[in-house]
Image (cartoon, rainbow, N blue to C red; front, side, top):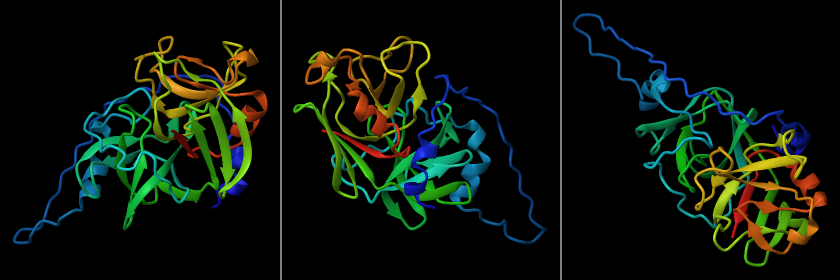
Length: 269
């Protein structure tokens, strides 16, 4: 499946921003072997799937301090993204301990995460949780759909410029607003996690939450402090460092960004 054909679908927006409940259900697993026979060994990922009910969801609301950090926060990828269609175990390393689970949805949007490294059938992906740069390894099984997005979003924070590229070619470039000196936009690579139609406030018709968080604020208005790409009604903010950490973009930039596939890589440099 190619995300070139599904940009419009993945850009459909949710009607509200709600926290997903962290269900803590316990799944017991027992095994019996015939007398005189050796027990059947199960691979680590099979054990992990049975124990997923004990794991917290990896969402923008959760934190996993022991998660591996992004080994190359300024690096490029091949554009590969994974769609999680059911609860999927997140491992510390390929076949290693389970640290979390990725749910099928993030903020009422389907879960798409970018792949930053691969080892056989294992893929290292960026997580939407704190701390910034958190990653984990998932097994590409029947709960995971693989695709590719040709787009990359580059935000040059100091230059206050946002560029969208498709297969390396520039398709749009704008002057944008970034975080103020005392609430800077966090740096590193992240991704477009969701697309939300804003129905409460009027400053942006669509908000594009990223898989990263403010390093200054633990919350924005009661939320988890998720940094986003969004519009702004006063164009004087473009070219300024005056936000609480989010990237404020002009209307035409927002229209293009809202059409990009979820999971698209975003470089905050």
